[in-house]
Image (cartoon, rainbow, N blue to C red; front, side):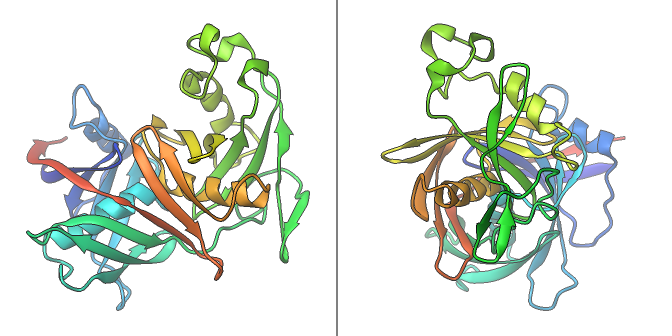
Length: 306
């Protein structure tokens, strides 16, 4: 099968975008893994099939696969790239300024800006309300706190070979477990690439992130966020389920912003600093979380897959 594709990224979180407006493409996990392979394939953190939506008010449906071929409900950086694909390819009028995207996590209203050529540069996505109930995240831990009428899992310790980390659990259509690190020196040397310089940057996510991603506390696995609260906002690294560490995670930035507000570490509006850049997150007074950030196209091409 020969596929035409566009390579896009949102703050370095990169995707293989494939036009499937005919609804004729079905990919097996091994094919997705091949497309995402950075040595033998195109390379990416995931594959997005751009499909028509069955919902009259939606301009298109985002069918998103993680790099391991597993289907994901939502991807914040991916939905901005999806938006750019729809606008840049004429499926959404560049002068419209807004539209609604369809995802497995539901409708996502999006407003956007374009350059002089009518190509999308920045999008603001209404990511909806955070999901806090443990059974809906899902997380197999008891709810130990409340926000308004909802119980949620707040700063609950989960043991590891390197000691316990405390997690606050939030879903943005996909599960997230957020831990705030306030004293890096107190953590064991074994989880740092450079034990003489313990910091968020030298934390070895391939060790500790992988352990927690597949922990029994998370029946559908989870995206694991490590956060340091600084004067200029939240600094974040993320180990994504099905992908490993990525340069950015939009839903993770949203979930971390919510967790920071819930635990009193920050307000409801923050810049979230990721390895690939900065996302602006606003947990608004209506309960919805708004994510603003860029998306970019790298190259196009064709590839043969078995």
